[in-house]
Length: 601
Image (cartoon, rainbow, N blue to C red; front, side, top):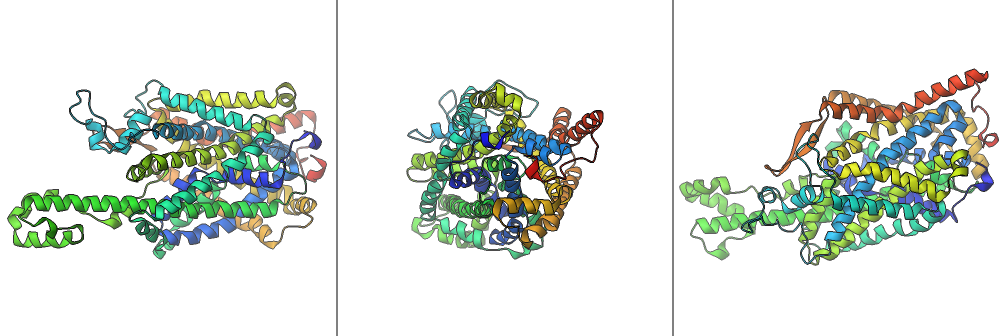
């Protein structure tokens, strides 16, 4: 593709906002707070920030530099560096395709909850009654109203992956709406995306600020914030803490998908991507910390509410069992009365001992939840107990939608940009047609996630569709740039764009620190997968009202293996194809992009 014919961002701010909108996503809201909770609260910030500077920012910088210099999508960029590396770009496109298939399903769930928020009583506040109108549904009573609404009303989930069912029409329509909006956002390519990001990148912060103001004023919110910032330094000795910090930085910035290369390819040649890489990375990590304060204030409110409800149930049990004055027992002296009554009236107390709950605020705060469980169950449970619950529900799910849609812009661009770089497609299909076909293809495949067993396939894609391949892709990227293309040549390309060479910090990270860290993560992932035994998933048990662990059937395990290998295998297969093709043409095998990129774009 000729440089002159390539569209570009109207101004650098559009590019920065596009990167922010893409990088700041649902993981900042539901993954980072969970990791803080699991790994020592404020103590987790130490490995997280270290990994940001030794892994996140250098790799982010590298991908922006490649995209801006080549002015091509991932397939074209890596093919330019070496014809044997075109598969690296294809692997990125395949991984982005897997992500697009299931990521927009989350946006469909957000639409479902948003539409149900416009009711006098939120539908997840109470259990529905049975067909006889005589009692609440048993499945809901043994679970909770929020769990029932998510698993039964939203997903209509089956009891296992083997039990299939028809498409949930409500979810299918929400998914159709989600893909229609994504298409409208990208219909004109970078020209329409550049306008949309002004809203998708900024409005979530408005909602977060509103939620922060509301959150810290809730009863018990400070208990959650205090819990977050109280460091448990012993967690620093846990290797898993450092591994989770590194992987969180890695995935939060969206490395390896090809989205950053695609976005940067629309920059002007002399754009200062170095400063932009630092700014976007810091904004992304700052958003994670800011969102955690909001989340932990909600956690504190929910935990305090549950703790005091537990104490109140115990108080009523004591008042109904023993001859006590009502004003003598209150939630502040429950422990005293339990001890006193057990000492003075042991026989009577023994009769109710099994019904006396153990109430602990610390235990409530220690209950760690991530992913959809946090976004659609824990938050929903907290929202229903707030005054003006409908307002806060609408704001929350609008924020989730914007975060999800912002990330989808980058995910779809990572697919469309490399396709557009193929001259055959560029000449035969307009932007609108190509973009529409990609969205339609993803929509049709995505309908599979709206069936009764769809959530189990969603979980499979979420856990196995990207992690392994992204570690492989980014490791190969940095090895290619540092040792195949050559760091000296890469420095010259950066000097050509910025007017200066990268300093010693960037070079040390690219040549040594980041590759070693990625190799360690890659090896750890493989060992962890092998030692984990047969892959398992969480299946909903309607009789117990909770999820139970089940092993994937044989066909599920085969599909997981295909997910793990399908994108990675693109690299050797494409290299083999390039070798055979060049060998037939009589081109020397060692002839690759040892020449400067300047001469090949």
